[in-house]
Length: 216
Image 1 (cartoon, helix red, strand yellow):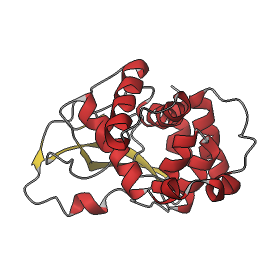
Image 2: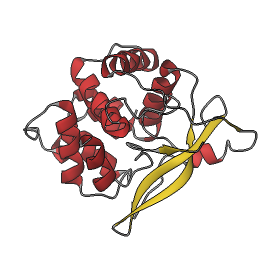
Image 3: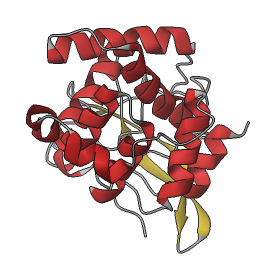
Image 4: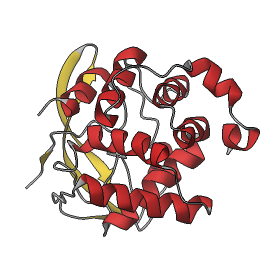
């Protein structure tokens, strides 16, 4: 069931990768939001809107248990080797064939919150441009739909979106439907402990590390 959508590029970098110790690097959501704002501004050349930050912060919150379970400054549990050649191995839980399976895998590692945020935004923008475009518009449900269409996860789309909305503090679905939102995107965008458990249970992503068990 699981789709490792974020591992291909990293696998090509595996030679010469340097494994570092898995270390918990907790961060407050305000610091995470600030790092995301700077990363989006640096990468796109424009400061993000509060709505954009709401969507991105919601996903990071799910992935890291509101920043408490962040490891090696990895914002979304992206697997493989980071841009600076660092990787860390630790335990994670994957839902495979409907079963929760514990395993150890290698994840990208970073030296700072800023580096982790930059790579997270870069991966979304370059490999999931439609989803990133919807994040830019602040459309949580469209973001979830675009990720589903890009095979970022194989879980139920409604449950995934529900988890994101809860993390973003949004009580109901967006009035604009996900599919309509995608077709309405400008062409440059279209191409260019409970919430964490929700993601563990519903998202078959490359990133379910809400409650990891690092290797000693």
